Image (cartoon, rainbow, N blue to C red):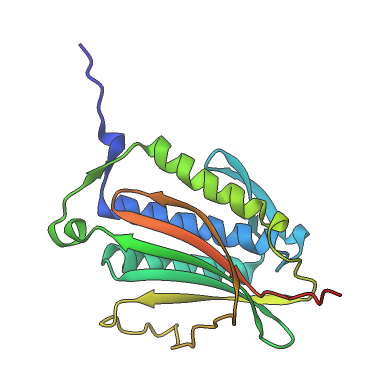
Length: 207
């Protein structure tokens, strides 16, 4: 009699690392598309997480995100990554307009002892789907970015992590008195990712 295996539900540190770093690559692309940082025609459509998503075809962006994911994977697997922030700034003034904050909690026991955890792949995908849908609908709750913009990525790591050659120390690129919207989170049982977007609060004078 054939027995069913539950191996697909076993989450290892390496497997969780792959899920989180891949998620960030797709989330970053979705943010760049939906916030209009790059022109619509520079994106190609793919299907991921059961959703139609868009990936930049710009070689510079593709290389940047590929290199970023490699470094994030190293930090995630070592349990050293605390937070990733994608910052959108005015191209003309470098003023910070939006901060997409991905906070990461890591199960220390998994990192230190090499144990695994269990969670349904489908459940993780549903949680990621909810975040991607919120990013796709961001135009409904974020102000319009009506000027050319650029982006940068900040990584917050443990203090004992050496700064890689391709990275530099940076100020936190904060927004004064921002508005904030908390998005959904997802949890692999090894890495929990909480998502929050903060944005510049343009106050309108009311007569």
